[in-house]
Image (spheres, rainbow over the protein chains, first blue to last red):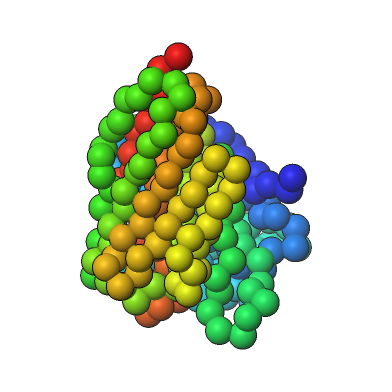
Length: 119
Length: 113
């Protein structure tokens, strides 16, 4: 069964450094997402991406964050200047186009995550 | 603001028992509700998705129900097995937010052999 793959599985970075988290969504999917989960807390939405632009972002997704689909297969999350509070598990997800005209009601499929540790 | 709550936070049962996990949400204007399984240190595996117009969905030993007007969903697991041990998360997609999922904090299930 096709799956979302994320690399690296664990990233350790010094505070203030830039980090890029990489994701390969399921090949025929058109909607892409990033979520994060701070240890012991709920999974939180960061951003969604469709048709080469951000379709929705949360209040967490400030100017330090950016997303890109540099080619036909990869989807990346960049954090420009990392802070200690950015330490979390970051999940990429993707979903296919809905058959219905209204909304996007297809399930989101998640990768195994990248554990980001900021020192 | 949508809030999703899951009860209980943790549950320990003997193998073979049938069990129910609960999820409630404060704003009933949702597109759908999705149940996930999360194993320690792993990602989220989608189990079931219920559209807002549906009352229930079944997959194998899993059955999820949705009462949209009262803001509740349940996940029923029949004949539980030790391999079912994991954290179960529910998440809603709201009509007004477009694409984001709002998650509950999860129920940590342990099935004892």
